[in-house]
Image (cartoon, rainbow, N blue to C red; front, side, top):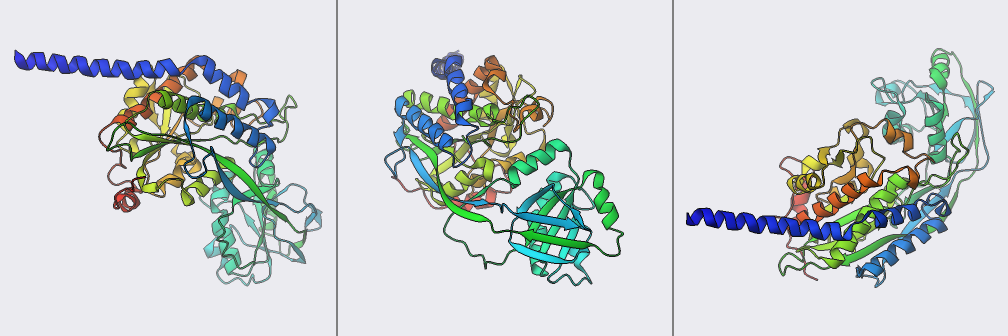
Length: 496
C-alpha cells in the first residue's frame, strides 16, 4: 500500500512538472508574435534578405533588438549581438562569348568563371569522369561533356559531381569544361539566378590555391539534342572569350545571444538554437511579375522558432545554458555556420547539441519533420514535445534530397556536435513544398498560422526537454559522426 501511494505521488509530481513546462511554453509563444516576426522578415522592404545586402543588415538589427528586448545576453566576445562574418564576393565577367560549331550560345551559367580566350577544336569526353580520360590527350584543350553520369544525369547529380569533374580536368591540364545540361525552364531560371549572379564564399584567410583555374560552364541543352549531335561529330569547333571576374570583400553578420542555465553542474553545457535568416534576394519574375523572393517559409519561419526559444528561455531558463545563433549566408553555401564553427564564441566542446530549424515548406500540417530525428538520443525528447501539441514527429522522408547536408546543422555535425534540423511537416519534397521553395510566392500571407502555433510550441518544448534532461544527448551508436564526437568531448569542457 505504501509503494502504491509512493508511485501515485511520483506520478502526480511528474504530471505537475509536465504541465508546468507546457504552461511556460504556451505563455510565451503566441500566434500574434509569430505573425509579427514573419510578416516583418518576409516584407518586400527587405527585398528577399540577400546575403551582404543592406536589407539583410536591417533584418540583423531587428533580430538583435529582439534578443535585447527579451533580456538575452549578447555575444560574450563582442559585447553586442553580432559576429562579423568576412566574405568574398565574386561577380562573374560581364563580357563572355561562347560558340560551338559556329553557333552562338546564349543560355550558359558559370560554374567557374576563369578568364580565357580560346579558338580551337573541342574534344567530346562523354561525362568527363575518370574512365573517360583514359587514352585521351586533353592538355590545353576545351572539353565538352554531358551532365551527371551514366547512372543519373539530372541537375542534382550534375551539381554533386562538379568538383570531381573540375579536379579531373585540372589534373589533366584541360583549358575549359563545357557541360551540357538538360533542364526545364524553371530549373534553368534557378540555375541562372544562382550561378550568373555574384557568388559569396567565406574568407577564412587560408587560401592555399595556386592561382591556376579551369573555366567551367553549364550550357542549357534541352532534351539533350546537342549532346546527341556532338557525341558523333568528327570535329567540334569552339570559341570562348571570358572576361575577368571581379572580387571584393563583404562583411555580413551572424546574430548571437546567450541565456545562462540554472543548474550548477549542467550550465556549463550549452544547447545551440540556430537558424539562418538570409534568403535569395531578387530574381527572375514569376507569372505575376513578382521578383522579390520573400522567404517566409525559408527561413523566416526557422528564424522565428529561435526568437520564440529565446523569449521563452530568457523568462524561464533551463538547466543547461542556451546559445542562440542566427546565421547569414546559408543560401550561398552555409557560409555563416562555416565561419562560426571555425570562430566559435564559446568552446565547441561545451556545445552538447545544435537544435537547428530550416524549412522549404510543408504539405502535411499534422507533422513536424525532423531531419536527423532518429540519429541522436534526443529523439524521445523531441517526439514527446511534438505530440504534446497534437503533431507527429517524423524522420526525413526525402533522403534523396540530402537535406541533412544542405543546412547549417551539418557544419556542427562535422565537428561532432549532435545536430538535427526541425522542419515544417512534409511527406515528400513536392506539392506545396516545391510550389513555394525559392519562389517569389513564399510570402507571409500564404502561411497557416494555426499550424505554425503548434509547430513553434513543439520546437520550444523540445528544446526545453533536451536542455533539462539529466542525460546529455549524443549521436546514436554507429552514426557517421560518432567517432569525431567522441574526439570532441574527450577533453573536459572548459568552464567560463
